[in-house]
Image 1 (cartoon, rainbow, N blue to C red):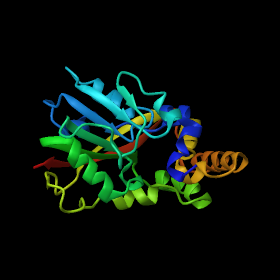
Image 2: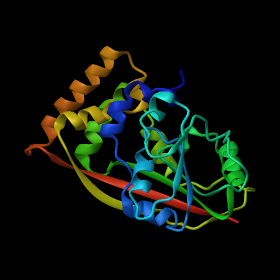
Image 3: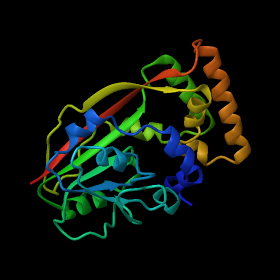
Length: 244
């Protein structure tokens, strides 16, 4: 099992605790006119559900390599595959979306495949949703998991500002990334549980994962002295490209 496929072991927790993209950010990274949309590295379908919640939603193809995650996707055509090998016809889709996933891809191979399946004028939208790391208590609690094992947060931070590999016919439409701040009410156990849904923690033995949960919960109690539920600050960051 690779690090990228550790999430399926806690698919239910991932689906329940991880944030989906904010609708405003989603609206700004792909057009309402898109009729066929790929949710790439769909996981449990957080993006798929957000797309299907739009008025007059498009058809969605959810592509995910882990069958444990893919089994939780509803309302879409489910395809077990990777970003580097898309079993879709050339020019067959209007938009491709990927959320908190680009750091797992082979960038050159994935960009080539996305360019192949997008029609001319189609959209690639990349999103990252996370608890806001500029808020001190969020960074401290999330840091408990990173202290145990450096997870994908490091990769995600690096991914927020980047350029696609050249030579595949994309025009960058968001030279400045879209950023939308929002809050979500969560219990203390839910916040500590979310820390345990990152790959670095999921690679640990079960007893060590339990210890991360307890340590995150204790640190949260030290830092946040408010009644539950706690309004957790999140942000969704988006980038958009057009296939020329």
